[in-house]
Structure formats: C-alpha cells, structure tokens
Image (tube, rainbow over all chains, first blue to last red; front, side):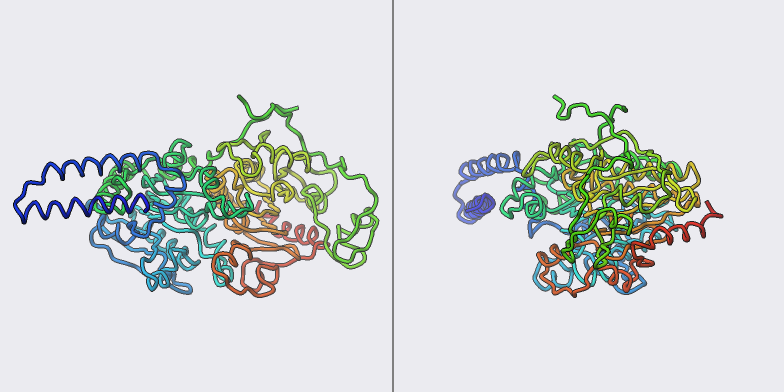
Length: 317
Length: 280
C-alpha cells in the first residue's frame, strides 16, 4: 500500500466514524479526534521531507489541478481565444482573456488531459508549434492593450514529433523567448506542475517566476537525464536529485522569485486552497508590477536575463 | 573548498596544431589520405568528397581571412552551480573537455574579417561536451553580440551543438532566454546577425539563438532540429522519414535560407556580408 493509500484509508475511516456519530447518537468524538491527530502527524511526516523524485511524482499527479481548473478558480469572465492565425489551434495550449481582481489579463497555460480521450485531444500537455505561436499572438494582443500576461506552465515538454519539426518548433520557441524578453507589459509566469525544458520556458520568460510548492522545473526530465547521462533508465531518482528541479532548490539558486504554498499532501488534496494561494500570489505580484513604468519594467526584465548564469572568472595569463 | 584549481585562462592560438600526424583515414571511403591535402581541400576528402569533422579552430580558419582573428572572449570558465555528478563529476568532464580541445569552453569568440569585412564571430566546439550551451557559452554569445553592437559590425555565429548543458540544470535552460533577449538588441541597433548551422544544430541551441538569425545558412550535411530522432522514437514511437532533420529537410520546410557546400561557405558568407555592408 502506498503512503497515499494509507492516508485515503484513514480519511475514509474518520468519515465513517463521523457518520456513525451523527446517526447512532453514540459519542465517538474521542476516537475521531485520535484518528485525526494520527492522520495529521502522518501527513506532516510524509510531506515534510519529500525526496526530489517524490516531488516529481506529485508534480505529475493525475489528480493535480491543471490550467483550466485554476482558470476556473482564480479568474472570472474567462474568454478563450483560439488559433495561431497561421496553421491551426493547439488544445495543449489554452489562451484567452479574463479578469483578475478587477483587471483584464491575458492568460496562457499548458493543458494536460485527465482521461485517455482528453489526453488525446490535449496531447498530454505537450504543445505543438501552433500552440507556441498562438501563445505569442495573445502576448502581442496583451501588449497592445497593456493587459498583464499570466502564464501557467504545466508540460512534460514541447511535443517531439515529425509534424512539430516540419513546422519548426525550435523557431516557435526561440521567437517566444525573444518576444517575451521585450514584451511591453508585465508578465508573471507560474509553474503549476511540470516545467519541462524548452516547452516550458517558451511561455516562461517573465518579470516574476513563481512555482507551486510541489511543481518541478528542469532542463530535461529525470528520465531523459537518466537515459542520456547515466545510460541507465533506472537512475531516475539520482537524476531527479542531481537536476535541482524542486521549487525550494530553485528558489535557493535565485532562479525563481517565490514559492506558492500547497495544501499538505499536494494541490490535489485541496484544489480550492491551492487556487486561493495562487490567486493571492498573482494579485500581489501584479500589484507590484503594474505601477512600474513600462520602460523601467522592460529594462529590469532584460537585465534579469542578461545577468543569469553561473561561471568562474579566470586570471589572465 | 574550491573544486577547481585556479586555472590560467587560455587564449585561442590558431597557429598551434594539436595533432602532428601526417595521415588521416576517411571514415566514409576508408582511404588513407594526406592530412595537408585534406586541409587544402577545405577538409573534404579528396577521394570521395565526404566532409571531415571540423574543430572550432579549423572552422574558424576555413571562414575568416588568415591572421585576422583576435580573441575577445571573456576570461571565464564553467562553474558547477549544482555540484552535478552523473557517471562522473561535472568538473571532471570540463577538465577532460579542456584537455581534449585546448579550449577554455565550448565556444571561441573573436573579431576577424571575412573578405576584408570586419565581423564578430562565435564558433561552437562540438567536441567540448557536445558543444552544449551552459552559462559560459550563453555569456560569450551575449558578449559577442554586444561587441558587434559596439563596433557596428555584423555578428556571425557558427553552431555545432547538441543543445543545453544538462549538467548546469536550470541555468542552462535560462541561457536560451538570455541569448534570445540580447539578440533583440541587434535588431534595435541595425546589426545583422548571420546564423550558420553546421552538424549538428539541435535542442536548446536550435530553439534559441541559432534560429534567430536574420539569415540562416546551413552547411551541407548539417543536422537541424529541436527533438532528435532518439527522443521522438522513445517518446511517441513515430516512424520518421529517412531525410528527417537533414539539411534538405530543413530547407524544404522553411527552417533555413540556404544549404551551402563547405567549399563555398566562406565565399557565400563574404557575399552576404557585403550586401549588409552599407547597414552596419
């Protein structure tokens, strides 16, 4: 039995006792309190010391809230917009306008599917070039009307396939990077689940980079790194640890700006609570960014990226 | 405790030849050929026409006017921000790559002239950890573009890279955004950027700086694409055409402007640069 199943079992037991408590009129409150205490302790223990690989699994948890779930809980008046105006519409990339705390914003997010059918449509959240170009179209639209851009990152990576290469996915990503680097409106990017490499950063260049507590962000998947660097597909745990892909680690490294707390056990345990925390963080960051004059904002963003990297300075001969 | 012994910074010396042997075997036709003849023949096999792999220094020599190269790279080298170890520690990998190539990092950066037109040029070294882009390469590329702006000369980048430097984790991913950001300034300043894609130009390099050239030229025989054959096979098990991600594939799908044989590369670059000469 997995740890998660133990938790589920305990929760079910407590619920059962509560019902008995009400219907049969027997006082079980002491027993219930004891079980609840046990549950809380177990949860805290389990989630206070997650390994990197456990976080990877949480970030990919099939019940984890996805972009559209958050859009429903964080924004009002969401109005979805479709198509890259060139060759198609990519359901793995959701874009539109919405309202957040009274402001009109542009929302761009990668969308996974929950069922087999949905995943076929959403392509497991792996955008095609059309998705990145649609995202760029919406960024430009936002820029014209000074709407802040909110991006929600949740992808294993850009779709690796023949059609993607034929449509030059590399260029689609590259141009997004350049576009976002200079976009004349505030951008807040949040990794809500999986931040998979180029497919993630293609909507991730921003004034503020946030991560949900159990999200991951990496240049390569642990599986990919295990296969390429360790030449051993079983070394995923080692790879996950080596890649420094968790939110706390990336915050420590100064690459992301803030961590958005998740409910104990992960966002899927209480999606409303996770969404409330996300909403709070987005509003707070926009309140800071929106008053900044655009020229200043763009210069600050440029300087942030110009300065990113770690290297050693050598003594010249 | 520092991981590295403080190394002396090494400048790129085009005169020094690492390999002194006189003969080389062509991997394509199996013929033993005179190295000097190969060199005089643009590193193309005089027997079968196959291209020999070029080091960054050889590439540089083949493109620029002799004796015009001046190293303008920053005196920096790779750090190990994640204390990364796979089958060997990352610092060890760097050290081995430095010894193998005689270079400080996976890119050479300098000023030079091509058919007497001054340029700033960066050339990636594939033999240095697959020419992968980490913090140092990102910084050198940016520095090259800034220097081109300063001098008001075109920027030329010759890519030969498998993509991001995985051992630097998120920092290598962020280099994609960094070089793309700085690239936008070339446009503001009216400085031409010629991107030359050689074997191979893939992954995070193709999905950032290499695809952002005003003009993109591919050397004949280049591999060009984002996700490689193996990744696609492993992820979605799709059947791929024989010419997948070849120069012809890239040209047919509008990824690049032209495919140029190695022996004409310098001449074409000169011609192209002369068309921009009035601007810069």
